[in-house]
Structures are given as C-alpha cells and as structure tokens.
Amino acid sequence: MGHKWLILALGVTAISASFVAGMYFQHDHARRRLQNLIQKDPYAYYVSPQIYKVFAFFGSPDEADHRMRQIMKYGFPGLDDLRLYSDFVLSYDRRNRVAHWVCEHLQADSIRSKRLRQGRRHFQADMSVPSNFRSELTDYQRSGFDRGHLAAAGNHHLQQNHCQDTFFLTNIAPQIGKGFNSGAWNKLEIYVRSLVNRFGSVYVCTGPLYKPKQKANGKFGVEYDMIGLNMVAVPTHFFKVIMVESNHHLGKPYMEGYVLPNAPIPNGLALRSFLCDIREIEHYAGLRFFDGLRRSDLFGSNYPHESQVFRDFG
DNA sequence: TTTAATGT
Image 1 (cartoon, rainbow, N blue to C red):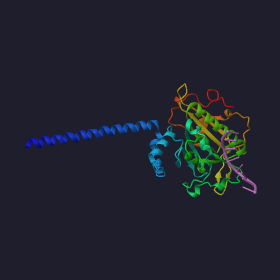
Image 2 (image 1 turned 30 degrees about the vertical axis):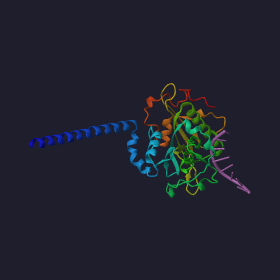
Image 3 (image 1 turned 45 degrees about the horizontal axis):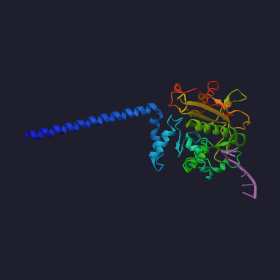
Image 4 (image 1 turned 30 degrees about the horizontal axis):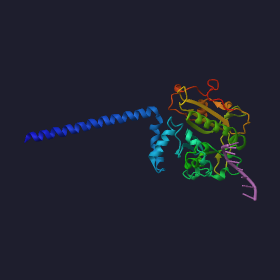
C-alpha cells in the first residue's frame, strides 16, 4: 500500500521537476532571443510600447508589425510621433506640421508595376492627426508652393493603397515647384529608383531641414516661411539618406546622403554636387540614420572622392 | 517622363 503512494509521489516530483526545468530552458531561450534582437536593433526594445499603441489602427497587427520591422530593420532615426502607413514609416513634427522623417524599403517590384499609374492621385489631410497639429489642403492652395512628396508616389506601385497612402499630407511638405520638385528633387528620386533596379534592395530616409544661417550681426539663426492658417513650415532644405543593401559584388552595404536647397536649381547642375556628409545631416536634423549598422561595415561612404560605383548619373 | 498647380 505504502509503495503505491511513494511511487506516485516520486512520479509527481519527477514530472514537476522536468516541468520547472523546461520552463527554465524555455525562458533562457526567449531571453537570449530578445538579447540578440536588441543587439541587432537597439531601438526595437525602446520603441515597441509606442508601436503597439499604433497597432490598433490596423486590421491585422501582425502584418503591420512584419512590414514595419522590414522597413525599420536598421533602426529608427528618431522616436517622435511615429506613424505607420501601408508601405512606409513616418515621424511627424507637430510643431511644424511637416514630418521629421519618412523611411521606405524599396524593392524592384514596388517600382516596376506600371498599371497602378492610372490610379487617381488624390491628396488628403490625415484625419488621424489632431486638428490643431494637422495640415490641410487649403494651407497649400495658392501658397506658391507644391505639395511635394517625401516618400515618392512612384516608389509605391505594388498595391493601390500603398500609392494612395503617400498622398496623405503627413507625407507632404511645401516645395518650390519649378526647378526643384519637378527638377533636381525629381531627378534624385529617379536616381534612387535606378539604384533599386540595379541592386534590388534599397533603404531610403527622407525629410526636411531648417538650416541655420549666419546673420548680419554674426550670430546664427534659423529663418523659414510658414503657409496657410495652420502655419505649415516651409523647409529651407530637404535631405535624402540612401542605403543600398549588399546585393552587389563587394557584399557590403553602401550609404550616401544628399541635401538640396528648397529653391530653383539650375538644370545642368549635377546631383553629385549635393552629396553631403551624413553626420552633417544628422547634426542639422537631430536624427541618427541606420544606427543598427556598424559604420565600419559599410562599403565606401558618402564622400565624393572615395567611390564612383554609384555616381554615373547625369 | 515625372513632378505638380491653375483656370474653366
């Protein structure tokens, strides 16, 4: 009689012991996975509570999470008022009514399909932004400025809603039309798409700059216009930081940055004359680009004298 | 070709 109870007690002890051991190893495994994640992308850890708040906006959180992680694979430039769209991620500047930055991950099929070009191009205010921080269509009308895309419409032709999302005014900034938006800036966007076609996978971060100038009294100050009743800021410059993932023969990522003045730019001026040290862009924008990459792992840099690989545009 | 605004 006593033996039966003893065997039962031993059995229960063994089962619970293995259960506890299993939980311990499971927990250890999860902890190591999390540690790897944080080492690869330090921002993921800090940003996830804020991201999950945004998830409620989407029908299927898992899909949004998956796409967001793909686009933001190399880290967040900043963490202010993050907004997820179907094919790009954006940080919104409520004070200026213009984004801080917009991140895209471009692959050949998102720029190739031409049939979506026929689709209606329809600018609209983003009603998810509180009205006192929101820019409206009327702010841009008769302002003398174009509604310039940050994430270009031509980069998001894979699905109809991808393209339509780029027309939200959160992704729009006041740009000089002739000589800039339809000129040098458009040339830069076409150049980015040519990189996508040649190398397959390109990460792009685009945004405005409000660049200080030295005044008559010798001190530095920032001066910029504002348009409309909502006082939408007119950036003095725009930047684009481009990172080509390692599909090419040297097997290392390649990064370069451009800064263009929001002004008419002579047609003959080569794009490469706007190449800029990325640390300088970070200084003016208060952002860190592709922080998840070790800079020493990069092939080349954005200095014009180092590499001619990507510099054969007109 | 692509970008966009304007006037009817």
